[in-house]
Amino acid sequence: MLTEFEEQMKDTDTQRFRFRQAGELLQEPRQIEWLIKDYFEKGALSNTFGDTGSLKSFNALDQCLCVSSGKSFHGKKTNSGAVFYICGEGFNGLSRRIKAWEIYHQIPTMDIPFFVSDRAAQLLDSDNADEVVAAVEEMREKHGTTPVLIVIDTLNRNFGPGDENSTKDMTQFIAIIDEKLRMRYGCAVSIIHHSGLSTGDRARGASALKAALDFEYKMQKNADKTVTLTCTKCKDFEAPAPMTFRTEPVALTGWMDPDTGEELTSIVLVQTERVHVSKPLSGAKKIAFDSLLRVIETAGLSPVPASNGANVAHIDAWRADAYRNGISAEGTSAKKIAFYRAVKNLRSDCLVSMTDDFYWPNNEANLQ
Image (cartoon, rainbow, N blue to C red; front, side, top):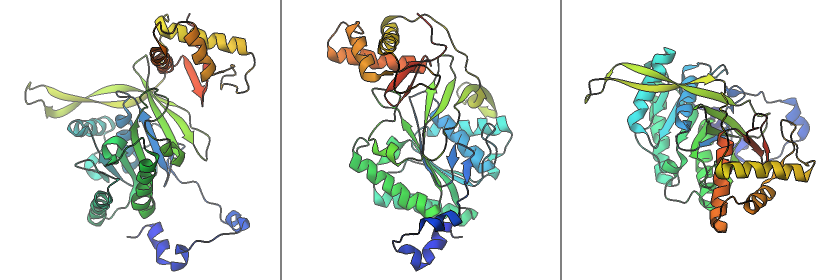
């Protein structure tokens, strides 16, 4: 069974570089084909990043199982097909997570085209990347199905012999994914990644990754113990609304802990509403929040409006004010750490929002 891309490549005329007149493109409008309605387009490259404990891998697994089974993803229609999950970490708990999803949604996973690797890949190594392709081909031949989605969880564990902070290595990583996976099968590729070390507002490593993406999402822990999936890049569409999830414990019927004899459990994600937790601000967090309000008030009207109509402050002005007002009594390095930690906590508690380098307080952020 050949993919659409492979069928096209049989025609030698499609292999040469060429141009088309703009009017020809308008005569053949390309229909939007969603893998998950509003969230992932077929054939797209996406990345979901988050801090440790943000349940980004639980979210990825939920998406995989929804697509492979044809189940809607929390009300969003999916176009079903085979999903290949390159698992780089969490092998021990993966079977329990899948079992919990199966029990909660009452969908037998034995009957769906969802395939999980038995080890991490080293995708910067060409020979290892070819092994991944060979393993996919083996499943294609055995099950007669072609991937619509390949998930790489996580980037770090599947990156291979390189430096994810290097633009050169990251560009090569993306090129290998495009050539050997996305273009070969005409499928979407979804990367699971960690947040940056100094701030949770961006993915770790070289910025070449975000530049190449069609979609980017952030998984964020909230003060009320929920997690929120937020779109941080949507190249060709309006960004979808954030989704918030709570965890639901699931008893794994018939699966027992051999040491204790007790029934094993796991969790699934269930869509919910945010519950804003009100508590007084203190310490560096309060100093940073007060500085944000002060900078906005002093600056007057901002050239970049916030989504809620509020004025905003540029990160440089906010940082300078926080430094002046005692975010830390130590030197510049300590002040920098204290400020970015406070910003991260304010964002985590949903008291502050941002776009690019501009920040503003949320409507509910009136704690003083």
